[in-house]
Length: 550
Image (cartoon, rainbow, N blue to C red):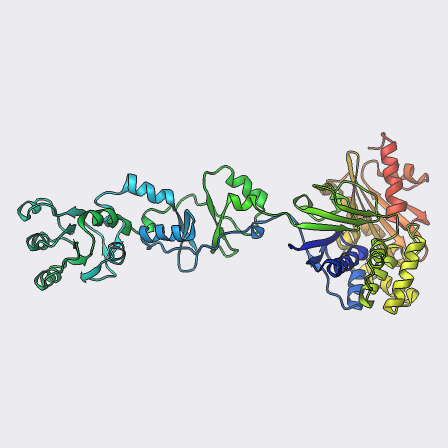
């Protein structure tokens, strides 16, 4: 079974993090499968306090589900040396059932690519009598392709001058055909061998397994003529000798297309769809070759399976959510825009917290809730319901929290106070951090807005960040691509919110939503503490029913 990722919304709050951890734990207990708790953003101060209190590591951070080449199954075919013969390269292709090889140096840096088509093109179009010399072919390659032995000469030297000549004529005629430094293919005729030496040939290839006489070896050595003895007949020698050419002479060196692991699959598909190439080299971050992938590998990529908790809106989900296979949703918010490829288990209940739903599911499946899990679930409920002060809180939320507190050994009032204070010290943080700490997007008709919420038990702290927060919102509105920005500065103890807003039509929208007089950029709303029930619902309702708000 492939892993299933359990993840909350972007800019995760305590419920989003704790519900992901606890639901992944429940699924593992029920199925024995690999369910991995994840997060789509950084852990805020309150959640960090909760996790440290119960000794739980933060879930894995997933920036995006957009598949990358690192997710693709590629062929770990080692690169080849540029000095390798075409014969060995051909054998290597057959052994690995691949038609493209990467040519690399000792540090795995790409020097070129060799395809089956390149080898065929060389044999049909490019090979001539001078090819071995033009390629500066090593005697090591020549001996290997001829399955022979070097009787005279240096195996590490190269054949760099001359043509390939077949000594099929009488010795008196050969003098007109053999040039200086030529490679002469001949048989066991002593006179022909002697003629090749006298004409200053560079190398003799003596076939049919003929024994080379001591005299010929001595004369060849004295005159700088190499001798290769091979069991092949003349025809076979002629047929295979071109296979000794090193791959650097044939490989493609220009216009190479390479990719790195972090490139998205969609970007790669767009590039390769325009090319008539079967295999592409994959390079690591240091530009070193690691393997080959094909367009088929891109098509065979499996979508990761995902369970969404505490959200069901695409704009709030982790980036790349369209590239996943959503298999479950557990949420307590309004149903919105996440699309699935087929029927799924979707549990949506009008409760104050997703953790309350998950607590019910532990009971429904008769799974004992251990103290650590109880502590996380209880923390999520206390956070989302603002210790039962939020209008979203239901009797079921309170009952669940009280039960979980007993299991975890918590005094609810004392613990909740500590938890809320852990996220205070607002004046020590940047406006960017505070604004995005608990931040959600909402799409209404053709307009997209965002609502941030900053909670505290201290009115002085909230007043201290007010002007800076408003200034920050105005500065980032244009670059955000949003119609309006809102920030709720919520006092948990006094149960009120000062709502800050910027954007064309924002003041008019707030006035219509809350039926109250309001300032140019702010209004105090007594009794308003819940974004979901007391903020989103009125704003969305006003936007949907008042077409003049733009």
